[in-house]
Length: 282
Ligand SMILES: NC(=O)c1ccc[n+]([C@@H]2O[C@H](COP(=O)([O-])OP(=O)(O)OC[C@H]3O[C@@H](n4cnc5c(N)ncnc54)[C@H](OP(=O)(O)O)[C@@H]3O)[C@@H](O)[C@H]2O)c1
Image (cartoon, rainbow, N blue to C red):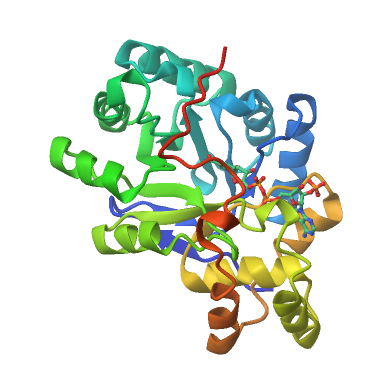
């Protein structure tokens, strides 16, 4: 089996293109799930304060026996803590929950343009502090639309290393990806298999049958060949392994084009639209 490729970020760091996502994994089960992923060979874990399971991620990472420098850990700022002092406290809490002295990547989870007087810029400038003091080796954003990214470009200094957005065959999100490509911001594709929603599409299952692969493997491979970073979530041991075995085959250009053509635009979105999403935890 091939090894996981890395993607070069705009600040010289390199991130494994395939990781393991832990959204909706029960905090009590997270350490076990991450341990299994690390045993299979995953070296990149994607968590968030709002998932409530940073402690489980940290426990698995710290007890893995792996060199910290060989692991990539991402977390994200809770929507409730965008004000600078809150963000500073929240970041301290993230490191404490993980039991680590740094994260590899810290993201603003959502732009929340209708909250905090639309001020995600001072939040971003606070993340710049974590980057400059070395406790976040890279910083980035999540769910930022081109208009939000343009504003950061005008009003701040550090270009986000990544933008983590919903991308899968039913929402290919080309405009956001193109902005990233043009401005040196790597795209991370969340819900890469649309939480399973694309796996019965005949266009995908026909390709999977031809290649002797599963639909999930074909879709994850499609992301990889498009150059995006992915971290599928699973708590099923056989699927954690299946999702890792995507480097021993290739899709043709025609396969990639056919899967991209399944895009349904806004209709294909499974999560909230970032322009209007305004959720702040109680
Ligand atoms: N930044 C954001 O706003 C944001 C939003 C959503 C997600 N994310 C990140 O992206 C990661 C992935 O997204 P996601 O968890 O929403 O969805 P996903 O990875 O697209 O799909 C996960 C779902 O698909 C199932 N599944 C996984 N592998 C499978 C396979 N090989 N065959 C059939 N079913 C399979 C899982 O079931 P089982 O677990 O039962 O196996 C689970 O129900 C998250 O964990 C999180 O790290 C970020």
